[in-house]
Image (cartoon, rainbow over all chains, first blue to last red; front, side):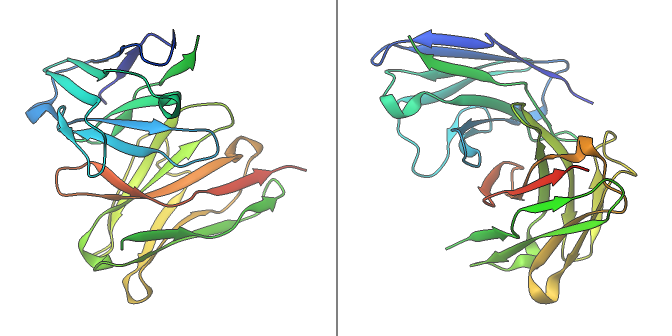
Length: 108
Length: 118
């Protein structure tokens, strides 16, 4: 089973700042099968990025993903008030699918 | 429009059985894998397993193998998650989700809250 480790656990930032979230896999992910999800309280997760760098439909271009192998990054270029949430990475190539433990982006 | 609509919240006692559902619409249900995800109170997302409604091929995460049963009825476009004997530790929100071609999870149900308490 592939283990995903996200860092930091919590990121305290102000609106307008840049957020950089990390996800490290315990083994190399084939074809960069790494996705990012956003979850707000009381809501289901929402797909942001898949294939490490492809934005899902309707996702603003301030969200970008990068990385390959075992190290991946989600960047939010300028935080909007609605971006404060928990973010999860997930590998979608191996079985079973696994999620990281999440990074909370909170308002500073 | 693709939609996954889950059954309503449940309150059960330890030892009881339960089956929750996820009904797909807006697409050919048989052609896409449906996965289940657990989220315990205040915790992260956990992958439980997945089923292909077209032939009922089912894969479980090792952590959930033998603990739950995933099934589907393609004739009514519905997937199920069931327990034969609930425990307090099964208290959680459960989401169904559709797996896309590359494996990403683009569509999610609204979640079903399961509470197990004596």
